[in-house]
Length: 67
Image 1 (cartoon, rainbow, N blue to C red):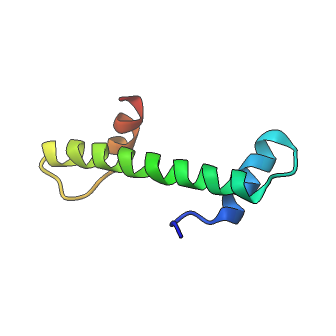
Image 2: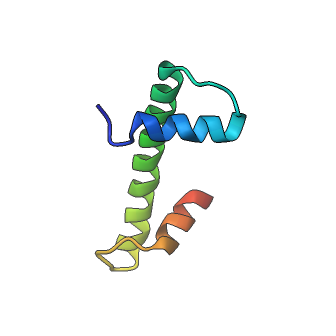
Image 3: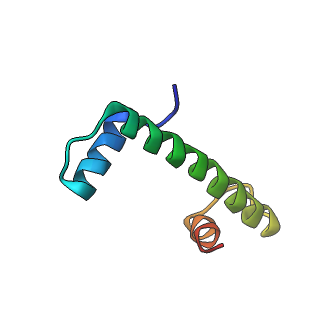
């Protein structure tokens, strides 16, 4: 099981669509969000290391999202 709760992704889909949500749809979104989160975090880590920091900041995340 992943890090993102299926119930949380179900709420996100319902909020965006107003429709009922299947468990498989919630799982699919959770899987995608986790993969994207890891990718963004890895990119943000590179920005942090480049700045000679050991802490990822919100600015690192924002830069990674732009890339």
